[in-house]
Amino acid sequence: MDDAPSQPQPPRLVLAPGGGEGGDAPLPGLEQLPGGAGADWGRSPQQPVLWHVSVTFAGPRVPRQQLHAALVRLVEAQPFPATVRYNDERAEISYWDEAEDVDDAAALGLRMWAENRRTADLPGWRAVGIEVVDRETLRARGERTPPPAALGDVRPW
Image (cartoon, rainbow, N blue to C red; front, side):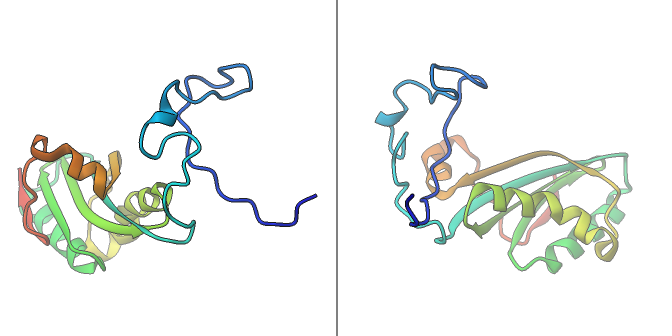
């Protein structure tokens, strides 16, 4: 038996649970993509990655001035600059975060609202969407994405 610690495996795309002859089968041709099947992903497990996180929260209508003030308090309480867009029933918070993997970055984004609900006087909304992408993925989108708003900006859609 080998006593060396096992290296974490990169995430694998799966066609369907149990798909393929040996259990979960990666998509055909994945090994030909940069960082595809079997790649070392170019970093050690402890090296953090910069992630762009956008989380959308929604719920019952809230007066706009009350919501704006709560969102400003939320942004001021965060250790990272965030950009917020909102209307009376929805708010989208976007920011950069450094984390070891996408799971850690997503978990922080999903906890943010609940952890600051009382101190920022946020409405009792729930997360309805999240997107977490690395810097290279966001760059690859190029002109397909609108230019970012100023960091720390809180304004209506």
